[in-house]
Length: 528
Image (cartoon, rainbow, N blue to C red; front, side, top):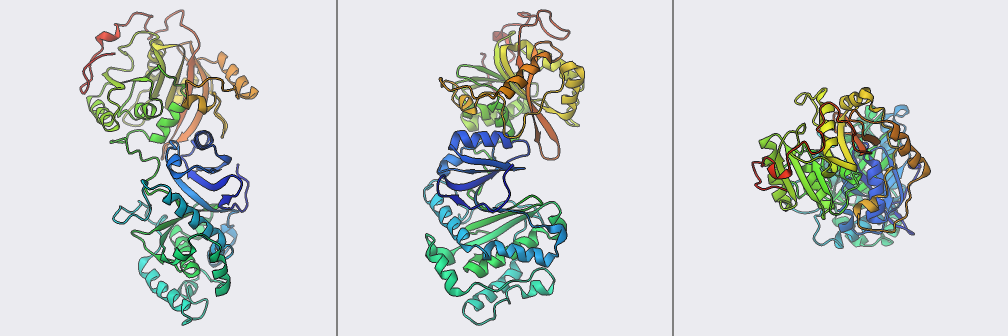
């Protein structure tokens, strides 16, 4: 857990400070990824966010696969005790984020400019004519435009000495929302601004503020109110102008019972919105996380026997290119959608699509190195006890020593536990019990030391006496992740040995037709 307290936006020794948002449960994947891809230091997390220090450039940070959005950190500090404070005092505390340390804001703006300057092909928050970021109604609403326009005029008047300090939030104070403190002396503000790079361009900035409030503080003040007060404070402090549609700069703030975080989004589109996926299926961050622990190596055959729109296959193929992928599904509609995604990603020559049932796969026994699949669940898919026959068929085609990574609903996970598989231990936050992700990202690399801790090895050995219904699938690790309204489990298994006796529902080795007789998919013609 990250230590509470003030956290500067940059570290002179290690580089600027950043943070990424992540789906709940994906923090350990993201922590490992920033260490490997960005050589990040001071990596720490709070629920839904991972903080790190790195000297990497923006194009390198764009390659993060398990992150939702990327931010340059301005401040991270102790929370505002919303449950014990009056609304006006809370909003006044928020203004102190700006007034007490304007230098950190100016330094962050300077870093932001440099990052964008060294990313000429990148997308900028300030692009004119681009679609504005989607925001949640109410909670993520920024500033009420009509009220801001009037108060912006007041700010301009104050800067010319035509109004008394403190008048900016007069309307808010009358409504009991906030009371502003005295403005910094003009000469002190200019002294701070002279120390920041590009300070001469500060007044040219247009901005908007997105604020999210959660926990007890949300009961006292809304995100819209908080964003409005912060926006007015920034206008008064730095002379920036509010622009709700096409700002040069966006400020993001999250106030919770555990922390207060302020940052600058570095990209207009979320990292999780893949440009190479035409039709979204499973969340791309979840699909990549599943592939990242599957031990994919060069020359392997990777199967998704319930591929749907092919998201898992596309995510894996983008990251691990020297591998052959096969996707199967019983639905012509899903296969056609997957075919479109493969063509859009330019991966049609590396991913084979087949039509077939997951309980009767057209593949020889022990022919697959890795299986990665999202087991469907919900009202539309009521698999029930079929989950057992699905796993038995997957076990049949998986080679001894091969890995299988599944996304299971809580019901499926519990059903497998009740069937005798035992409870798979949840992997602690920040740990991935398998070999370093660097080995996964570079499977041909040799000589990397085994950094698996003794406790992790012991945990894996303890799994050997817990097997699933087919008798040779050993649970390795499990991660509970959020899918939005529901939770699910990413579960990893390994095939420990060849089944001596074929359990009910499992095919004997060699009992299935050869791959050459596979049924063709509606969008591909050919065979393995």
